[in-house]
Each structure stands twice: as C-alpha cells, then as structure tokens.
Length: 585
Image (cartoon, rainbow, N blue to C red; front, side, top):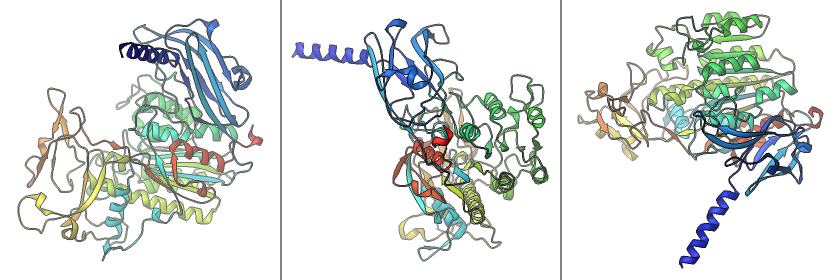
C-alpha cells in the first residue's frame, strides 16, 4: 500500500508540473473571426526560449496568428520576485472560422486548449441593437415591480410590465473564470466581448502580472463596431459612467476600480452619446471634487472633439438639438440618485444635484441622436441602481428602479415599432439572493414587526395605488406592503419598513475593521437584530450565482434560447450585425 501511495503521489506531482502553463485565451474560448486579441502563455518558472514550442492545429503559431510571439524571459511581481517566463503576441487574429487546438510546451510543461473561432451571417439581420441591462435584475425584482406598479386582484396581475411580453427568452449563466460567484465587471465584459473573464476584469484575461492595464486584451463590441461599421455607439447609465457595466462596453483593465483610466478609454473609443454620472474622473486634479491624479481635462478634450456637454436635465434637453449628434452628459460627480429620491422623496444627494435627468430622459435623447445615423447604432442602457439598492437591502428603492427600467423597455419597444430593424435585448448581469415571501401589514395587532409579516393566506395583497397613472406607486410606505428579504446579509437591524429618510446603510465599520449592525436603526419600533451569515468584512448583501433571465425581440432574437453562457450573447450580437462575415475580413 505504501508503494502504491508513493507512486500515486509522484504521478500527481508530475501531472501538476506537466500542466503548469496557462494559455490565454483560455480553453473553450469563443473568438469572433478576424477580431484582435492578445495571445499569452505563462510558464511556471523560468524556461529556456529554445525549449518553447507553440503550435495551432499542428502549425507554427505565426502561420495562424499572423506574427511571431515574443519571449519574455522572466515576469516579476510588484516586489521584483520571479513569476516565470512567458510568450506574448498583442493584437493577434485568426483569419478563418473553425475549431483550433493550441498546444504549448517548454521542458516538462505542456498545455493544450481549444478555441472556437466563429463567423457570422453574411449580411446584417438588424440595423440597430438596443441592449438594456438592469444591474442585478432578479426574478423577484420583476415580480415586485409588477405588484407595486400594476397591482393584483384575485391572484391575477392587473397589468403587465413592458419586459413581460418580449417574445424570446434564455437563461444565462453568470459565473467568472475564477469563481462560481460573480461581479458586474466580468459579467458585462462577457456580454460585450464574447470572452469570460475573472472577477473585477473588463475586456481582458486576468494574468499574473501586477500591472492592471497590461493584461491580455480582447476586442469589445464598441471596438468591433468602430472597426467594421459606420454605426453610432451610445452608452447610458445611472451609475458613474466609469462603473463596471458601462465601462465594459469600451474598457480594458484587470481592475474595475481604475476609473480615471477608464474615463480616458472613453476618449479613445469616443461613443457618440455618453450619459451618466462620474464627472469626478473627467476633471483635472486641480478642480475641486476631482478624482484624477493628473491635470488632464477630459471634458475639454471631449468638447474639442465636437461633443456638447450637458450637466443637468435642462442642458441635456438643449443638447438634443445640437447638430453634431455627439453628447457628453455628466450629471453627478458619483452615482446618480435613484428615482425614489430624485422624483419623490428628494433625499440622497438630490439637494446638491437637484436637476438630474432620469433613465427615461437619457434614453430618449440617446435614441433621438443615434437614430439620425442612417447606418444604425448600438446602444447600451443600464439601470444601475437595481443592484446598488439591493446590496444594502433597500428593496423599495430597488423596485422603483426596476419600474423605471421597465419604462425604458417600453420606450425601446415603441422605437422598434417605428424601426422594425431593431433588436432589443433585456437582461441582468447577475442576480441577488432575494425573494418576496408575502406582505407586511401594519394593521395586524401587536408591537413586534415580525408578527406583522403575512405568509400564505395571511399575506393577502399589497395596497399600493397608482392614482396618477405614472406607473409608480403613489406611496411606498403603504400599510400593507411587500415582504422582501435577502438570503445573505451582514449584521443589521431589520425594520420591516421603507427607508424614508434616505438610502439604507445596514452596517458600519467598528474599531476592529469589522462591520456591525448600524445602531442608527436600533431604536426603530419593532426593529430586529439579524446576525449576519456573511464574513464580518461584508457591509452589504452580495450577488447570487443564480442564472439571469434574458428576453429579446426583433431580428435575431430567436437565437436566444435555452441555457446560454454570457459569452454566447456576444455571438448573437455579432451575428445580427454580421461582424464576422467574409466581407469584413
């Protein structure tokens, strides 16, 4: 037995060494034919250049990728410690669609990966694509938005969301290359590039080097549209425009927090319409409120390139009439305020930024401007704060954001009626662990709020009203409201009530750098301390690994069906624009 175990251990060690190399793009990568990507092999330890062999389908790599790889004798970490040898090739291309087997070896290290290089339709199926994403959109958000907005009588909804009637559907897997869990960077990056990547990464494969801006790049949809078409591009978000989801349309970085660099990348790609928050990263460092570390004035740079600047709702309306068609709208130094605060409660930072446009306002202008291009457009619109209000478990704000996002879906559907050559895609990038379990009824007897939670027959129906017909409930603090809870959380005080004084902050950091329940909510009548089930370094609830639902309508929508990876979605987008047709090679 000892001999057997020793032999097994030795074999296991040898197998580990033999497979030590890492190849980018990774195994089973899907690559648009002719699309530039960075090829890289990382070896475990230092190897000799003469020992390195790279073949693709049995041929020398140069014959397939178009150029010779460059040998790097020894990559190093931030402290100068050896990481090992590598070979790289920037902006490689594969000219023909097909299955490719990449074999790499150096000494006793060997690695084999396969790539699926895909082509597309010969001619475009759609002139325009409107890609609508509610960050963190889960099934419960949709259900809650419908109940709040439309109401229910005798078990049937009194109306439908605009997204309910999109006619094609798929379940989408969201996991990262380094974990089943996920964030908005790697998820949206997969949608926008066709390559899955690691958490926090945008438009790159996450390699081992410390520089977050030198990782192997893959082409994103903005670059592909610029390279192959004359279409216009629009990016709209209620978040900082440099935040993960809007950034994924144009950016390349291992670290989504490189927001100043991402702002500069917008200048590199120059979408025709850019609308959102995050002006702090566009301002020169000498301007109050700037978050840049250099004196580059990106706003001036955009204006010099012919963009009209808008900083509030009125200026946006004026900018819509400009002849250039290029608009840079920056309406907040950070993330824009949510609809509940902006339109109804006047909380958050609304006093400081009192005239912010809503998602509908921004989308309306974007569609008007982009549709002037006879060649068509790609427009990405993000309802960012479905997610940003779900993290702190501020369900009322999150559901109002979902309603606003759904109204934008309605705008897109109206646009598509007049422009039937438009594909509409509606999805989330990841989910939250959240469910609606019934109602909370203030009229129930007792002082304990948890006793006012109604489940099964005790739930009844919530009593939201929409007397003015704007699609939003007239009040969120009704007497019988939705009971919506997360399945993961830090320590916090559950109040069972809407947060009328401003967005919820469930946990705060103590002197031990641990997050504890925010005592500001301790004395709310009926509040209950919930001991968290997350590590103590978590200050809010986190994303779930559940599949997201994608719905679509228009030319090419039938390609969305069954279970798909997020990287498969890019393949459909590329196909409807014929980005991989032989005419574009």
